[in-house]
Length: 283
Image 1 (cartoon, one colour):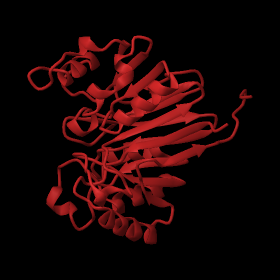
Image 2 (tube, helix red, strand yellow; image 1 turned 135 degrees about the vertical axis):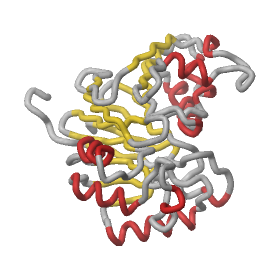
Image 3 (spheres, helix red, strand yellow; image 1 turned 90 degrees about the vertical axis):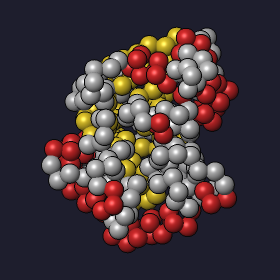
């Protein structure tokens, strides 16, 4: 059995893309499912959480931990359509720690379900919903044997990066950050150190980036350099620009792999298994 099992349900940023030009890399926005031991964990609730929710309901999964990197629209747009949230047998824990204004996770979710922008309130959710607030830098333990290290990312309104460790395997979810040659990069290096697999924000090409400074996103060149310094084994380009066609994204992947052969562009539906190695006391 893998120590950490990862499935990509959405890898795009800003807005979903629909049509024949987005079949290879997918059109859903950020959502990654991670299974580690008995736990089912979800990172972000972009539009990819909608088909994931259907699959979890069909499987009868009743215990789910949902971690927000932050709550810009592309990372929460699918939550009101996440079927397990409306199933009275489900237990849903929602974690958030990026907030700069002191908001609680419950207040954030209340804002997602707020009329007149959405017709119902969060009180229509029938799952047993628990809200868990943390601070960047905290270490979370959502289930036995799973350790999640958190850190603040450089992004407008705040964002959090996650490093999951289990049984000697490490997966990092590091989206929506901007290279800053300072404290922000230091956090990426700390979270990604010697990771087996990391997903990182590569919204812009190096040529595009000068037009989008301070927008809170990175490039494959910057992420590749950080991953090389951190000793990451394999890393995925994530949060593809919403207007990027498959042809465009393939060209970016080809360019990145010439410099960083351990890189790839994340694709909707990709599945990864990290086996790690047993730690002292593991069986």
